[in-house]
Figure 1 (cartoon, each protein chain N blue to C red):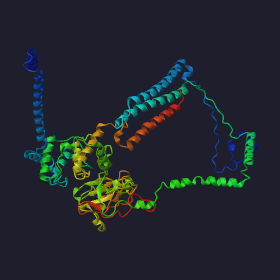
Figure 2 (figure 1 turned 90 degrees about the vertical axis):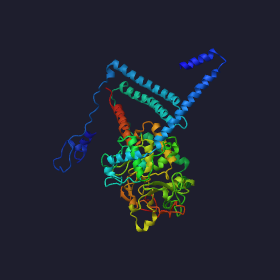
Figure 3 (figure 1 turned 45 degrees about the vertical axis):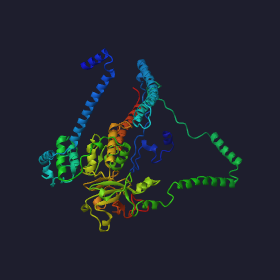
Figure 4 (figure 1 turned 180 degrees about the vertical axis):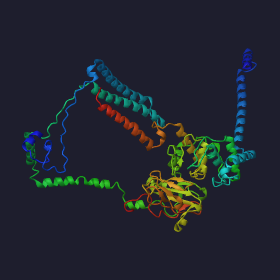
Length: 356
Length: 270
């Protein structure tokens, strides 16, 4: 090809075919490649040991059928293991042996076939290199003409080009078919405004703080210094969708020395004798922040190591979280049980579109 | 034995004088009286060892305290710049800190690691009795909550809610801030688990008997014992550390095996 072109158009500048004759008049800045990549052809054929030595050939054959035997044994082992280590209801440890031997058997069964087939192909099947040329993609002229003929005939017989109303209504019908899916999938989302669901929790005035998971109310006097209680709002356990509400309403209750708390003047009434309640939902991406260090008063989020300082209204002192954890204002009722003064004063958890 | 067999022989030799069952009845009565007496004796002995805190124990404890702890905690356990006051920490705290070897502290660091205990159980109990005599505090828990015969399912739920965020859901431990860590709970004695919950050693929060009842603590201990005794149903647990050790295993062994197989498939046979 290349030599043929050179002969016809010797003066085409920049053409790849020029490279054997460097130009002298206008060298420019282009780096000219002095030699083209030459197809090295196939490497010389090197016979394998199995081609030369009949003993090695027999040995390879033995190996291949041994691998296939191993595959059969593995499959039988899997069946036997399923019977020998039955799954017992309520006994989790029975899963262990069952899975281990079933998996071992099936793995041997599959690997035996696979490894055997590859080894067979590599050592015993025909081993010399051959070149297989690609077929041209373009069809023959008669095939192409025949295809055009079929299309024209189809147009004539169905009349799709002629009867335009049929054609256009069909297109319209096809566009309309997927529309019900949009309605159906929209219904999977929240029925009401999702922003409202993000902004509100079960906490409101006079809701008791109760223990997770027992639901027992908590007396302020029950908490000793350094205590931590994982808290849910009273009545959460009775809800049908309690996990959805718990994901927003989980609260961590901690008792510190009152003098350790550096409280803002407007928030001084939010704690009760050194007992503070903060949302457990991280303001970064919503993991439960519950790794409380009693002496440093640091709250650590296990997901991305955001660290909050409980003594300073849970301000962020390390990590990717942007906002402090929201504080739940608490007090005690007439019986000495801890209750919420109100709900959270800001949305809990991570940012969303309507709130940067 | 010789007497027994001779009795039998005489009984069989002269039938009618004594029923053959009488010998058996006599043996049973003898065994029951000796066994019962032994049981009574041993139970009273056990009760004596667990409950009694004598004045001599407190005095022994004070001597041990003055010799081993007073440098940091002060001669009267009032605390110094190097160590906190021990008023009100209770016997449970001393028994935990000294019994797990955390105290005496070997060196300053982010937190006191557990190491082989430096004192015998008797000496530890004496020091605990001394510190408890200074001011009231959590006591060493009663044996009935330490048997691991509670409800493991409830214990697991309580563990997941209250403990798992630091100690890992399988009790394998985990990292905290600035070099501190929650230790692994495997192999920790039940009494130390209970005492740690009640006293909140180092940076661990306090879970007193009013927020988590003694029965619930017994359930948590039951769950921890269950974890120790039952192997992971999923095979190798790789330290129960989660994605770090599992990911490392998959990268090194899983990918390694795939690369090796790929090279083998592509290589020409010799």
